[in-house]
Image (cartoon, rainbow, N blue to C red; front, side):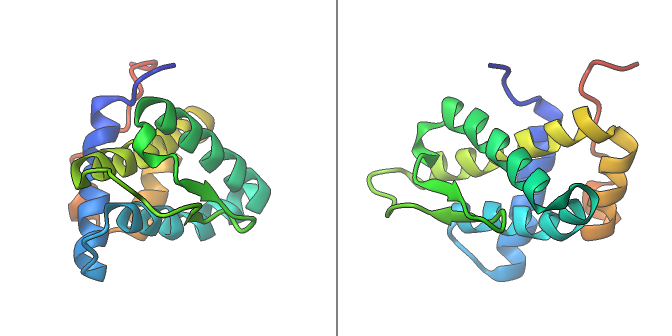
Length: 143
């Protein structure tokens, strides 16, 4: 499986940090779930709930193969990340990296399926442009 691209990891860290600060959450899984929840309405309108759920499921599967510490997360019928079981024995650093990996793969899949411009537009509609202004969405597949 392909590792998440560095630019997607960087953007994911920014979005997760922003959400953690906005909700004052110290839980990295919650902050990653908040990022996905903020994306869900826009993407569900674009591709339907089932399409969004499939995209997030794929991102979670890829991320879980890289970071087994997120195996306690699953996706409900609405397309939201939820806890399957209590997190045990995982450091918060692993939790942060797992959440970052989920969001990074979700964004990478979006770029692959709908393109850089539309992905950028969706992110800018949800989060302040100043937060992601310098983010590079390119997958390396295009010039």
